[in-house]
Amino acid sequence: MNIDKKLILASNSPRRKEILTSAGFKFEILVRETNEEFDSNMDYNLVPEFLARKKAECFKEFDNETIILSSDTVVINDKKIVNKPQSKEEAFEMLSSLSNKTHEVITGVCLKIGDNYSTFSDQTVVTFEDLNKAEIDFYIKNYSPMDKAGAYGVQDFIGMIGISKIEGSFYTVMGLPIHKVYKALKPFIVF
Image (cartoon, rainbow, N blue to C red):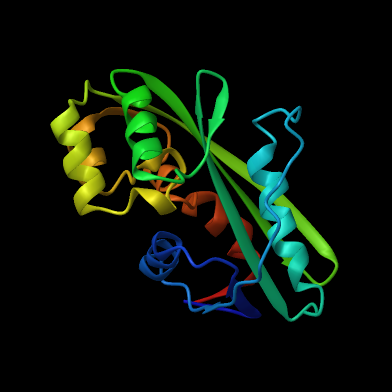
C-alpha cells in the first residue's frame, strides 16, 4: 500500500513502527528532540493530542508533499497521568497501583501536511487482574518498562497475564490507534 505523499513517522517507538508496518504502510522514521512539558492544569484528555502536535511542529521545513505522523500515549489512573517510570522502583509502584484496577489509555495523533495540522485521539479502558510482587518483579527484570507510559506494554508478559478486559482498541494501548490513522490517511492511499 502506498501513499501519494512521503510518510514520516516522527517516533522511535518500536511498537508504532510495528503497527504501521503490519498495516502495510511504507514510511521513513525521523525523530526530533521535543519538549514534552504541558500545563499541569490542562485537562488530561487533551494532553496526548497537545503533545502529538508539539512533536509534529518540530518538522516545519516539510512541504505539502510530506505527511508527518506523530503520536503520544498517556495512561490515566485515578484521574492522574501516569508517565514513563524513571526507575525500577517507580515502575514497581506504577504497576502495583494499576493492579486489580481499571484505568484509561489515551493515544493522541497529529498529522502535519505543510502548514496544516490535524489532531485526533482514541481512548481505551483497561482492567488489570491482581498482580503479585513476583509477577511485577519478573516483568521489570525481563522486559522494558522504562520506555512505556504506565510502565507496561499491552503486548508484553504483564499485559498477557494481567489484563483481563479491554474496552476499545488494543492498538491504542500499544501506542497507535491504527483504525483512526488509516481513516485519516485514506484520502492519500493508492492501492
